[in-house]
Amino acid sequence: MKRPFDVLQYRTVAMGASGLFILAGIILFFVLGFNTGIDFGSGYSERIQIAPVGFTVRYEGEGTAVLSVSDGVIGFTRRSAAGTEEHLLDPSEYPSSADIAAALSALGAETEVHSVLPSANAVSGFGFPATLSSEPVRVNFSTDTVDCTIEDVREALSPLGNANVQTVGADDEAIYQIRIAVEDGETQNDASGKVNALLAAAFGGENIVVLQSDFVGPKFSSSLFRDSILALLIALVLILGYVAVRFRFAYAASSILALFHDVLAMLSFVLIFRLEVSSTTIAAVLTIIGYSINNTIVIFDRVRENVKAALEDGVKVDVDALVSLSVRQSLTRTIMTSLTTLVAIVPLAVLGSGDIKLFAINLTWGIIAGAYSSNFLAPAFLHYFSRMFPIDIEKKKEEEEYSLV
Image (cartoon, rainbow, N blue to C red; front, side, top):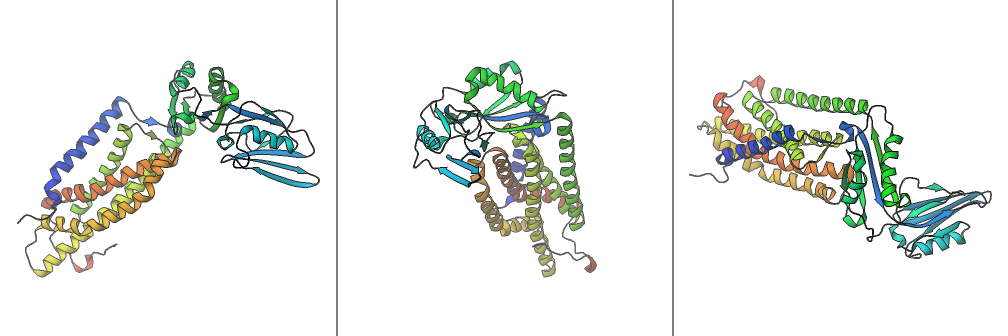
């Protein structure tokens, strides 16, 4: 009689699909290589936003004054011998940049309005909170009317020859992530100066807001890459050592192959979709290794329990039937565990940004690939290895196995 949801019926399809996916990744690795971030590739990374100036502000009064911008709310803090005054200029009360400028003037600052824009769109970049002085501090405001595209930014940076530009968020926000390679001896100031000079020439220096800036030198990047690979190898060796002691050879070999599949599937996914490879990627791989091997061990523990029960009952052991039965018995747990994890991770992959978004995307794929390998590939490998190294032989009492579940 045909068994319901016999995973071993799909072993050839599952192994073929995985093989093709990993092969595609291998081909892309030799053709294009990894899209390494500055963590591993060394270089300068800068996130900028092109936003017009709403107003400039100066302060030459008594004491010191600090201007801050956070979530569209502009703060003005003045400290003097009389004490500290703090004022939060909320967009609901001051809807435009001109209103904010007028409020700051009433508080003793000197302001000059450049354009009237929604005050809720105030942009906070490097330099904030800013201590005010006689030198004017500009406050920029994002607007969907900025006449700039990613191609314009790439054209502006074309003299560098090696600039990588990506859009961050919605196109009308005009936020871009810029990465360039650096040469030996080049400092962060040198790299920043090159990038910002070209952007200023194209879009006006007063309209460029630097949101984030990172710099990794060649020596540090090579050291970080070496340490990350070492951490990955140590994790694999420790897990493989545990599995080798924990299970018989057929179980251990199947678990190990499924684990290697998960690592290769993750790297292939990164290569195919040209995701950035950084220390965040290594963190995602390490997370998935632990997640996947745990699920495989749960299923294999169930296989051993079913084999042991069949032997105790004195019935003929059908290993394939017991493997499929064990997968079905563990399926609810696998689905619930995967879904609850995805519920927490997918929103970060969709709504997050930067390294958090990248980590969540990698983790989402890793959870799917790990659940797939545990339920389809690991049982398929066990099907073949159990023919060479039978698993339906009772162990001695002193070798009695324990369960982690």
